[in-house]
Amino acid sequence: MAFENLIDARVFSARKNSGKPAREPLWTFVEMAEEFGVSQNQLRSKMKDPNTPKPQFVKRSHSAPTRSYYKQSEMRKWWQTQTASRSAETKN
Image (cartoon, rainbow, N blue to C red; front, side):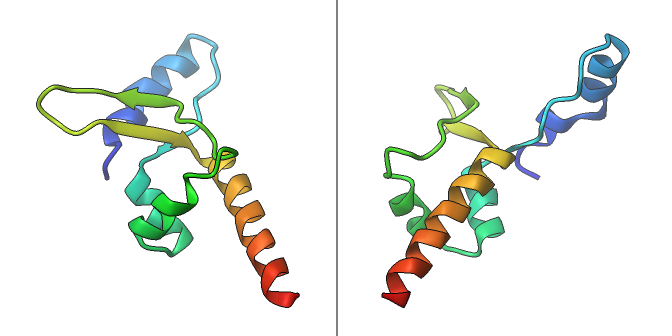
């Protein structure tokens, strides 16, 4: 998986042992496209909307592409509003 280092068991157990709640897993762009059943180009065009959730974490590197990670719950809510508005447009 693309973000296996962010959900490593040691990270979750360390937060649990320190009394802090575990963090919500994050999604990459590719994982979001797979989850929503659209191509990456379709998702990219939808994400130009100003109401799109902002990334929770951005990893920049000189030797690799920039990776953005998004909260699953925020992206699911946003996607539901996108699909609801699209279905309302097709009914009219």
